[in-house]
Image (tube, rainbow, N blue to C red; front, side, top):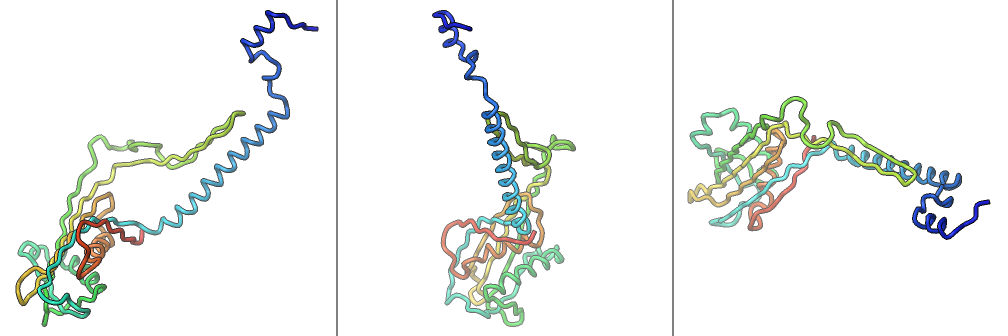
Length: 241
């Protein structure tokens, strides 16, 4: 039988890994395995719950616009049913079809706040214009480049007898063009020829300039009409995906 000596005692204290108590017993290994399985199961459930909520939000997009509006009504603000007509700059008359589409979207947005298109007997004129700056992707962003992160979304898990770990990976691509848009809408009092309402909406991102995005920008630009609060505002509008 092994007998402890002063030298052996010093060795056991200095090198505790040699002690028999450091070797996990069969029951301890089973407990650690069970703990690991619980951690992995919790990770899978968390990912499933996150995927459920992400799927629920996948049907909507968010359009954020920075809006600044000013007003100076010479008389009482327009009441519901007030008539207006559209006014175009010479440059807007050249691109007739595109301006027709933009004014059609503006007509829908103005109807939501009670303005009525009536070119025969207008009280106000409305001028709307939009400018778009397209920033192309950088030259190094070619095929096979996925930006930062992994190439595809996924879940990774790892574990040992010390515990478990899990994580999510999402690719970050910058291959799509980046859009910077500015929309301006002016309302002019035809009795005085003075601009009595001015609003501007700024939007930027990778969302393409679809009709839905422009409609959301118009709704944001007219929020608070006819007397919107002063100062810049960040307005969010949800649109179908």
